[in-house]
Image (cartoon, rainbow, N blue to C red; front, side, top):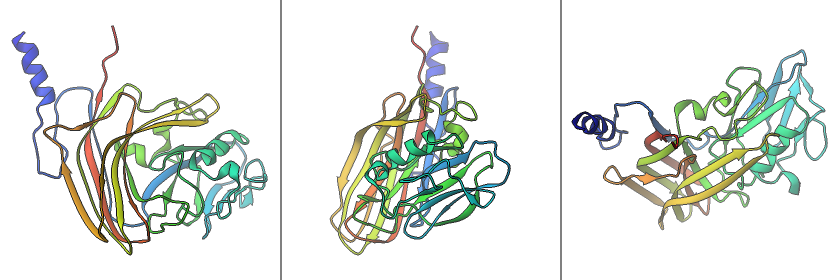
Length: 293
């Protein structure tokens, strides 16, 4: 019994490096989660990768205005696209079938067989109208895939939250393999078997208008056998701003925000107008959930 108590103590008692750092844990099945975004246009929204077999370099590019083009050997891939199969997803004036991020991912994953996409910091319900940052033609055949960033500097009518981060394991923000079960199949839930605990969140936002809700979300995100995504979103914490420059620090080491098993964490800040500066971060840990006996 004494050995069991000592083992549990070693697993659960944090050693704090500083007030703004995740604690260090000993023991198996505990992994740190963290993220920080201090630049308006560098938050990962989704990841995209070419999984086809056609000869020639595949690329992804996003034009000013939001239109996204998939190419193979400099030629638009006519097996995918919306509203027509011409390699282009019209996200400057998106059709109803592709006006949310979930619908965009579903079309990428199910139209043709050359491409796969995974949501990261964007929710499936987020709108697509000019909300992806511009990107020059980028090789999509690399093992990690391509990062598509949310354009956090623009508070368009299509975007409610204008600063956001996914607080997860490091590779979950830049490597699509984290979300893949095989080369061509999505993992049904990459976070299954783990439970998130958020111990620190901070935001400092300057906007030309009122800074509104700051919230921590628990997101259960699943993909079916065809790669279609669905989500259940819960608010773990929320606080309203009210000034054009707001800083909020929430250190919850004494009692972390506890996500449900299989959830991942997204921290988001909304404003009614364009951002002029932002700093947003979060940290904590994922704990492996014991299998039921």
